[in-house]
Length: 75
Image (cartoon, rainbow, N blue to C red):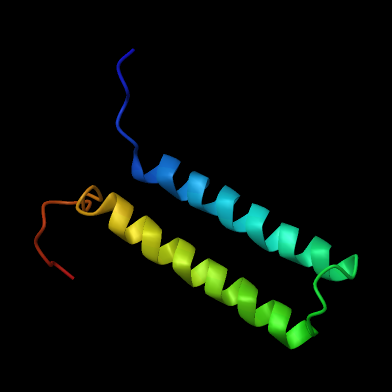
């Protein structure tokens, strides 16, 4: 079975799903009392997960994002 290349849109959707799942799991564990974190700590962890997700997305896509237009700055 041949694999299809990942488009920037697919990669962004996958990143969003992973980040949402991780932050949702952390929030659920905090609400249930399994992770005794303050609201500030939970928010900081969610921010780190979000930033790491963005960094991984950028590395993953590399040069796959093609600029629109002809590449000249007419603007």
